[in-house]
Amino acid sequence: MSTFASPGGARTAGPDAADAATRAGRRVPLGSLVYLAPVAMFVVLAATTSGVLSRTGIMSLLILAAVLGLASVGQTWAVMIGGIDLSIPATIGMANVALTTLYADGWSFVSILGVVLLAAVTIGAANGLVSSLFGLHPLVVTLGMGSLVTGSVLVATNGNTGGRVPGFITDAVSPVGSTLGAPVPAALLLWVAVSAIVLLTERRTVLGRHLFAVGANETAARLALVRPLLVRVTVYGASAVFAALSGLLLAGFSGGASMDIGNPYLFSTITAVVVGGTSLLGGAGSYSRTVAGVLVTTMFTTLLVGLKVGANMQQVMLGVAILVLITVYGRDRHVAQRL
Image 1 (cartoon, rainbow, N blue to C red):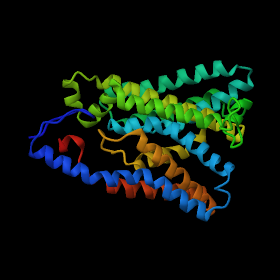
Image 2: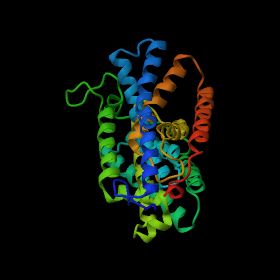
Image 3: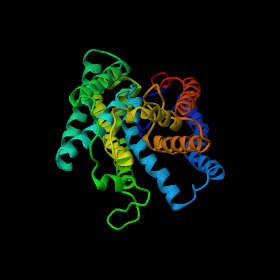
Image 4: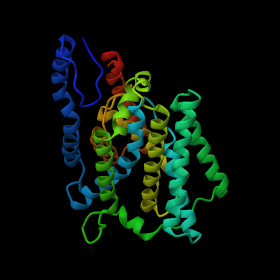
C-alpha cells in the first residue's frame, strides 16, 4: 500500500512504504554528492587557474555566482512545477537597458526600479496566465514572450541601448566593494538574503507545498484545492523579478547595456538547475540544490575561460553538459508514477 504525502508529511506504513524508505536511504549518499561537487570543482579550479585563492579571486567567483543564482531562482521553481522559463534572457536584457537608458535621462534609481519590477511582474504573470488558460506548454509561451520583450525594447529605444550606470551598482558587483563598511559586495549579500527567503518559502509556506503538489500531479493538486493557475502566475512572476534584478546588477560590469547581455543565462540557468539535480519532470528538487549547481557552473565556466576556451565553445560545452545530465536524470520516473 502506498499513499500520497506532501513534503514532510507522514506515510502509511506498509511493504511499499518500507521499500520506498529503503530506496530513499540508498539515495542519500548520492544526493549529498551535489553539495560536495562545488568543493571538488573549486579544488580543480584552484589547481589550474592562478589568482583564484586570493580574496579578489574568491569574491569575483561569488559575485558571478550571485548574478547567476538570482536568475536561477525562477528557473528552479519553473522546473519544479513541470515547466521552464526561456524568457529569462530577454527579461535580463530589458532590465539592463531600462536602467542605463532611464538613468541617463535623469530618472532616479527608485523610479527605475519600480518601472523595471512592474514590467517584470507583467511579463511573468503573462507567462503564467497564457500557459494555464490556453493549455500551452511554458516552453512555447516563454520563448514567444522572450521574443516579444526583446523586440519591444529595441523598438522603444530605436536600437540605442547605451546610457549611464549608477555608481553604487558598479560598487555592488566589484570584488573590492563593501556594504555599510563590511568588506562584502552588496550583490553577494543580496543573493544570500534572497536564498534564505526562497528556501524558507519552499520548506515552510503553503506556496512551497503547492509547488511540489502541482509538479507532482496537477490533477491531484486540484482535488486538494490547490490552484495551479495562481501557482504558475506566482512562479513565473517571481522568475521575471529575479531575472530583472540580475539584469540590473549586470549593468555594473560593463557600465553600459545590451539586450543580448542575458543570452548566456539561458544555458547557464538551466545548467545550474540540472547540475543541482532538480528533476526536469517536476515535483521534486530544491533551490538549495540549485545553489550548488550555480557554484559548479560558475567555476566550470571560469575554468574554461582560464583555459582560453572561446565563448561559443563554452556554450557548446554547457550544452553537452545539459544533454548528458538530462540523459542521466531523465531515466528516473515522474514523482506521480512512484507514489
